[in-house]
Length: 137
Image 1 (tube, rainbow, N blue to C red):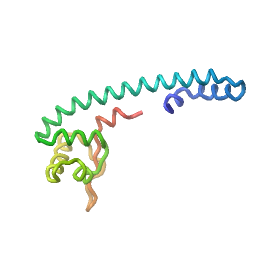
Image 2: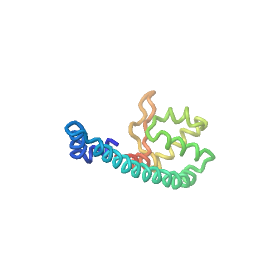
Image 3: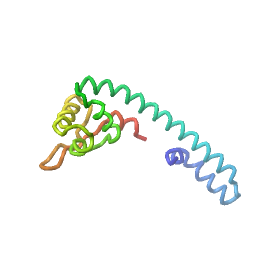
Image 4: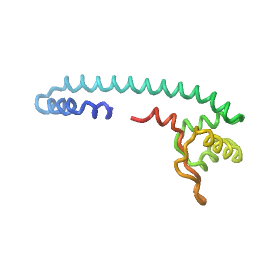
């Protein structure tokens, strides 16, 4: 809702003033309901885009990874589109050596972007940009 209010800041302020000055609750409620409708529409479009991306990526992960764990890897990056590799290894449900190999492969083919390379005991941090791009406001 805040995105809608920010985009319609002048009307937002005017509606709030009208409530204070004239007790115009009807105008405020109508504006608020319009904001809810607009944001719900955006949210539905975003959810549809995420669903389509998941379907597309399921096939790409299968092809690129050529592993029985491709679905688990995909599910993990959709649940955590920014993550440290140690978290992927620990929480994906994939055997550790396989998980490390899969994350390396996803970086090699450009499906994951390295945010921070591994350094000493600190695991690399990765981003799954296709999903993050859909979530940007």
